[in-house]
Length: 319
Image (cartoon, rainbow, N blue to C red; front, side, top):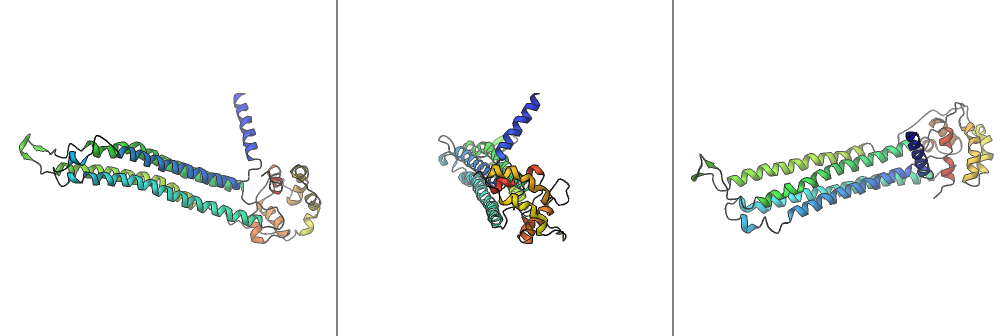
């Protein structure tokens, strides 16, 4: 019973949300979600990096300098690590803006083209395409957040390492415990330690960047609002085949009136009477009634009797 109640509530909530909410909005909502997640990730990494890079008790030049030439460059090593993390945040912002604007503009252009029609029955975007692009955007946002959280959480140790090393620049390895007569050359310890740590820093950033960058590459590789659909127009169908539907279509005055008449139009479009309007049937209907063949194929959509009623939302939108 609880599971049934949960399903019922979910159905009511989703149905209420989708009512008057065209599929195109899922593309826009996905872009906004991706931008929000990406910017939060970038801000978190930059914030944690800056916090880790500031200390009022450690890392001062006067503490670590003048023991070796390598040790004198401790500030440079820290700056390189800090810069790498902040650059990741900057690149993430640029990538998200680029990917989001490309997808947003593609949707704007398609919507403008769909609205420039003869009959008003075009489907600007199929629900499956809208949802898939929403999920692609969310996936990109999540991969960016995975990388961002990992980098932000590790920034404290990655950057703090340099500050805590400030009093160790004069420590060198000894041979057989003889630290008076047999010590490594000054700077040997700093050099080896910095190489090991910087490799850890940059290789870690490289791998985590592959996760976030991979999300953007995957999204843009599969961002396509047009599926190049095509089919053969039935030569036996002409304008007269739909003549019975026009009295219903032309007499519609508002959304409620449309909902009472839309089921009477369904049989005319479903010319093979299988209870389902295929994309080819929808494209044929649009083409016969004055749309170009290219337009009809591009903005066609399959429909059941229930989904066919969404035409009323397009003809008489809520907002």
